[in-house]
Length: 338
Image (cartoon, rainbow, N blue to C red; front, side, top):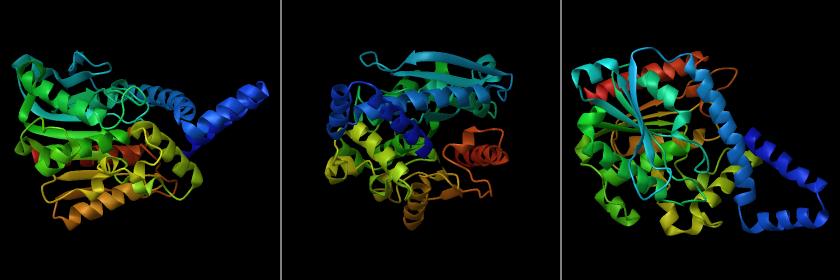
C-alpha cells in the first residue's frame, strides 16, 4: 500500500518535466481534489490485481462450473456478478451455502475478476461463491457500493434456483475495501436501527446471514493506516475520493462507515484476518476487540512470520500462510453454514 502510494507520487513528480504552468495547475488541483492521485493509484492497483489473479490461476481445480456477468441492477453501471459452484450442483440442481464476496481496491479500483480465481478455488470446497462488482469512486460515492451490494443480495434471492443459492445460508465476505463494504452491509442486515441511519433497507432476513468473512479490511476511518506517513496519505486520498469529503472524519453520515464503532451483539459470527505487516492490521484488531466486547463469535487469524505478511497476503497462494488462511476460512464457513 505504501509502495503503491510512493509509485503514484513518483509519477506525479514527472509532471515537473512538462511546462511549469501545467505542472503548477496540477499541483493546485491536488489541493482541492483527490482525483489526480486517485487515478494514478487506480492504474497501479488494477495492474497489481491482474497480476495476482493470474498467479492464482494455476491453483484453480477442475470440476467448478460458472455463470458469469449477471447484471443485478439494470439502471446502474458496473453492477454485474459472477457465480461459481461445483459441477455436481449443476448436475443435481443443488442449492449450496453461498459466500457473497465483495472485491477490494481501496474503493477506487478493482473488479470481480480480481477475485474470480480465488472464488473458483473456494467453490471447490462445496460452496456457491459469488463475486460482486460495484461502482467505484468517482463514478459513485459512499455508500453506493453498500446499496448496490444489498441489491445484489436481492437478485441472488430472486434467482436462487438457477444460481444454486441456498438463501437460508448466506455469508458476506470481502477483502480490503470490500471487507469494509461487506461488514457495513452485515450491519444493515443485522441491525435495523443502523440500517435506518444509513438509509438502506435490509435485503434479507437477519437469520439468513450466517456469518461474515473479512480479510485485511479498514473498519475505522479515524485510524487511517499504520504510523508511516505514506500509508496515512494513501488512505486519506482514497477516503476523500470515496466519500467526496476532505473532512470525512467530521461528517456524521460518513462516520457510519466506521463499522467497528457500531457493531453489537446482533452482528453475525465473524472470521477476521490480516497480515502482521499489513498497514490495516490495527483496523482488524480494533474490530475483533469490539466484537468480543459485544459477545459476538469471532475467529481471528493473524499469522506471524519473520518475513512479514503484507496487505492481501491471503491471495498469494505461494505462501503457506495463505493456504492456512483458506483452510481456516473453509472450516469456519462449514461451522456456520452446516
